[in-house]
Image (cartoon, rainbow, N blue to C red; front, side):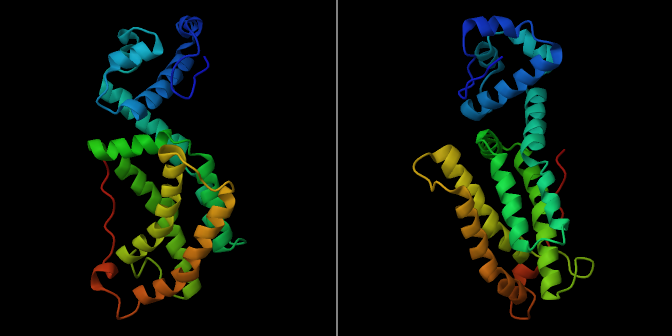
Length: 241
């Protein structure tokens, strides 16, 4: 079944074909369509409207997902798997690459895996109080912030995490770069409008600007004159219930 970017089947004939899909394929189509649907309409939208979008009966949705909450949980797992498994984050363990090369690789792959659907779902989840955004932040800390700060500390000959836990100031330091890339994605996929044609050049600019001041900022954070609030350890992210 071919799905347009607005989430609608291409034709009534293809709606009929959806009823004959194998169970695993049908479930995958439902998840994909539901992601598009809730990203567009918000989490308060009904599964009845989703069924109409799919051209199936509402009962078919509940055959695969016993409740709307179960469907949303499955969507969140799918979004995390597709957008934030981040195998490319393993680049931080590659000692043959510079930090700049690692960051360019990490964010280039990140942008390749971002189509705007995940961003919309994360934003809506945060506004509606769902746990998806907290789980995303946990992944960001584990796969980006901690390995990046660990490497920057090693280069600066600063203590490791075993003797000096990750500090709030270090988290915020990395988030200055991460927020720039995320906002670039938002402008590209959500806000619309004109954007630079060369994404790789934008990334190189963000990363070189960040690295130009990051080492000095890190040293100041570990010095005696840094604000006490920024030197406090970052508590572990609480697991979602």
